[in-house]
Image (tube, rainbow, N blue to C red):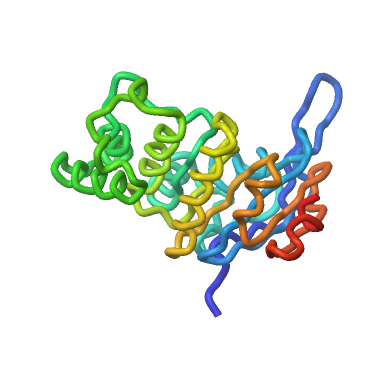
Length: 238
């Protein structure tokens, strides 16, 4: 049997706040298989954002083990972690983080520029990803010329342009209205059904229902970890 794509074991992260210690993560263990779609939920301050930063190689645990795609990340230097982020992880953020004066196709191609990919290939791959998210006719538009939902689609295309093994989304619908939120989540669900592994943080029950599994955090620990099915979604997520 193949190893999990994400294999986190006993992760601990402690922050010093004044004279007090805050245990943002207190022995978190979680495995995610290739092709899963996992929602991370919980109240503010429960540790879910810290955990997402660990998954994205943006922060390191004080103790514990994290293996991504079979590679143990503990002890790797910043250059090695940066290379893993660029090759294996795509990020989607609440506020889109697009370059304001840059066309959609160039925003999407930006990670490939940093990876040293030639311009012709960058443009080919960026156009393909924009087509995939339904924006084939918007390549030359800047963010100001796009709706919020379209901007988030550009951000998703950018996250996918390096063909990542893992797509991480932190409150991907937080800046969108209800109808647009459902459209964006339907897109992420379709990507997952095509084989893309997706892990996302959300406060919204309607958004979490697009996942196949919901993990709830509380006080730096995993409180529950259950599959999401239409018949029992309300009981699991409520």
